Image (cartoon, rainbow, N blue to C red; front, side):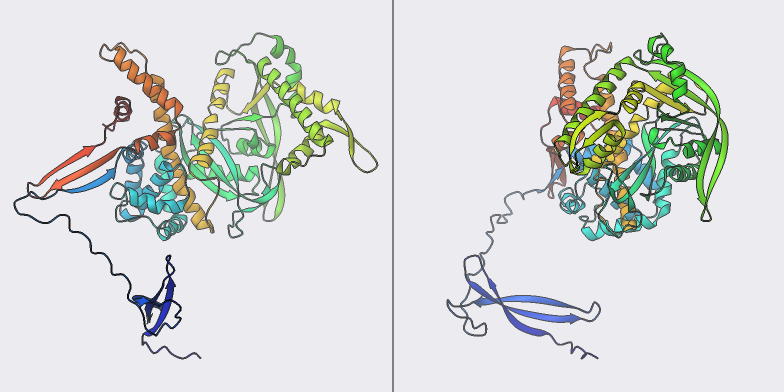
Length: 588
């Protein structure tokens, strides 16, 4: 058993070498704190060692005394006192606060966290930082929150590393906060809402994340990945929910869990729109079994789709069934009854269940897209052929090239295994080129060719949202080491994503109306249209982050004079173009 500490302070001397070469001697006092069981130390400068001396307890030379601060402002009753002043960077923060209000986040968090002001303010402050910094790393929030102190939702001081890490961990264990946000975002959605469903995989080196499991990444490598499933309301153009799931969960189970989450959000009659990534037979069977309306893209070379295309190829490629929404497409639709197999596991057993249902097939053909697809395929074949013949190793792309070669190439090798010749696999290449230019959609809801194509194309908004999450909120790389903190970090990034999409939507709306005469005499003057043209050019030239950084130069200086109890603000000059944008955003 160790000796108990006496509680007396420990005093010794230490040396510090200065930049000028002098050795300063300090007296260090260390005392054990009985509560934390850690030593607290203090240091007092005693002097400096004479040149050539090493004795810390011998004779010391005095150091240069500190300079006294000059008192430049001598009080004089006959002269007026100097006003107190403060400098605030207000331009960018005004816009960020306006976007937070416009997107409804103030109202949402005031409702779901009405009695927890501290957490509410920290969540919004972290989301503001993530949005304003374009997804910069989290350690930068300390200096950022210090710079804008007094203007942020959390005004009690800077956000430190321990604060945001504890916040993420708490949010990760608070399902009520996440569900509350999702339900508020879903309020007001109609039953006929189109809901885009998509997911993205994220690679991590961490061994502590339970959701990160070995699975095939998009580059073909087996990596530690987790998935984030996104729900996007197409009609009102906003993300409404997400879910973090293990990376090795099959698509059918992902969709099954997504349907359960939609029930929890009371979205029972929405129509799910997805790409061909979520169009496998088990997924279609699940949709039919649950009577879930869906619209999805399906590959044109699937066995039971190919005969329909062959039967109507002449009509599609040489007919005149033109789409009004996109004249370069011709279309054909039909309905079929078919049995789909749903495969899943229950109690450790693999189960196959037959589901009979009626599906509607929408087939579109574009000669323009066919020419593009053909050229792309031929160029890809030539590029991969050259890489293989020259023996290039292309790292992460190697598996993709090898898979392409197995399917579309006939490779000849010499006795040593070296590739000496490559020719096309004619059957596979002809099959591929036969389906180029075709787009096939599948649905269990009766509709027409025009509506199906328009609704499917609107799902592209979720693709942009996922790009924004990865590129503008820092979501591409998880910088945490546990599942709870990951969940909390993604939640804050999701709030930031809502702000980014809201700001992008408003800027796009503003750009579409600028420099266009509207019949208003005061508006349709050459001077006003000239300013609007400048603003339009400015918005098209700069990214959203660059726009925010531009307005970060706006500074407000607040002055207060005690004697007269007078307060006034001085704002740096803004151009007419800048004032116009602030006016259109509703800030001034």
